[in-house]
Image (tube, rainbow, N blue to C red; front, side):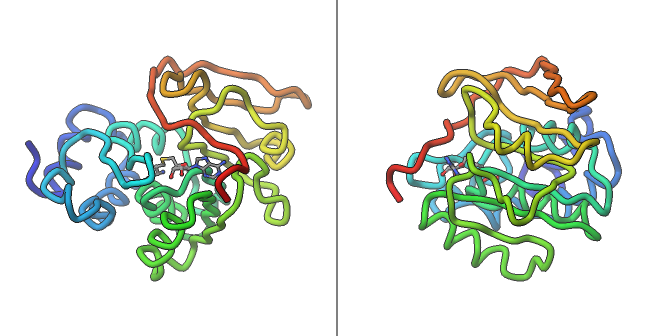
Length: 210
Ligand code: SAH
């Protein structure tokens, strides 16, 4: 079991889940313990999801690594994330897109507030408390859209808020059983690619509970 953040990152690197030097640096600069609730702190460097309360989880490091690699970010990328949760994924993305910005949406008030505090010193992250299925019209278009909650199908608003040469990465399927999919626009049509990664994200929920 990895005992430090550095060991965790080294293992992800050896397993070829982190491939890019910039992604590696972002993981090294983002200590997962800072995003782990106090009661699970001894598991911060274990490669598994952890509860963050409200029935939600901080994703497993290997999943964060795979999604981050799949995004193929540039330093200037403008990214929308749906499902801020602990803020861990957003923090990593922000380290890679130092000239760009991360716009991350959370619907659970408590998680939004906690993440806002944790990410206070990250100048290129903006947090929103709203329904992520609507996206963020006033900030569109985005180079990349990443969903860290499971969706049955792609919301139309995300397609509309994507740049012509951008893409969307999302776990698509039933609640807790999805496959990672990538959506690109080609000649005005949205083309789907199954990335062959089974996953189990908490489902995206609607307006109820606000
Ligand atoms: N990226 C997170 C993990 C996210 S878990 C991390 O790094 O820790 C999925 C998150 O999506 C949960 O926090 C959940 O509350 C949120 N969520 C669910 N439905 C949502 C919606 N409609 N809009 C915004 N966030 C939503």
